[in-house]
Length: 378
Image 1 (cartoon, rainbow, N blue to C red):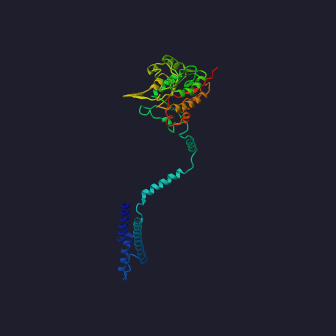
Image 2: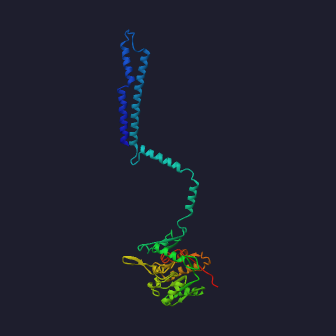
Image 3: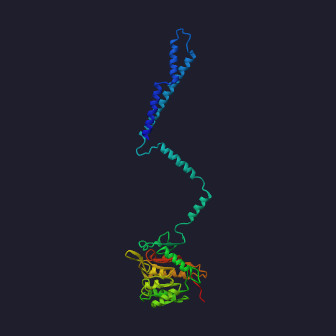
């Protein structure tokens, strides 16, 4: 910018100097007329110019010279001021050129346009965005994770912690589960009747505090049946999984010891499952193949939703989680199937843990959106 200004200033000065050295056409004619008039002053009466015309031409020439001199002085003064401004500007200060001025004027125009009063649509959008924060429930969320991401507790993120989050190995698996649930008779699809529950409580007989805490509760629920301090045969367990709506397992692992995965996958249908053993929801890598686990065998058998743990947990803290979860489920009573969200109550269970981001983050749900309700028994 400095180079362009200096070049332009030099051009103006050169032009002004040329105009001073070589007067315009009017000035040259006036000079010649003046010379001719001075030569004919000795009595020559046939002059081409009258005295009044000579004085006007002289005045015109003088005015042009004065204007040229003023232009030169103005140009030089402007250049001097610019040089003085450049020299007096502190180091590091940004000097504005024509481009910067144009940009500033454009920004000013845009700011003036934006400062206008918002329309009705703008007000509605702003009110909607302010009222819907990321920490508010956003409905059911389905996560399809690969083998590298499935071990992380995404459900405990702040944006998802209060939402109903379900996991599925693929969209095809989720679509198949929706199809299976839609053809089930005598109840709405995507619902689980808590009144039809089968349980295995401490089948290995080494979780005495857990058995003490839940035995009375399980046996007092109408329509519930199961084993406490013992295990059924594989055929009995397979039959109960196909006839019941909910299966509760409080023991070690995911119960594969009592019903192998190969037999579990062959079931025609399967109840929703609450598997509170250590690493019951962990998927293990199999070389170049996708990760697999017992919880996926439940989904293959037609289980609509299975709550399981991603890693090992302590028995007392996971018992607090289970107690809070079951309390929310059993308090829901609705005949039309519009009960509580099966996963929506997990956030309350996490808050009851002493280690909400360790033990409380371990339980996750595999399957599709499912609601739980209780049918009153006569």
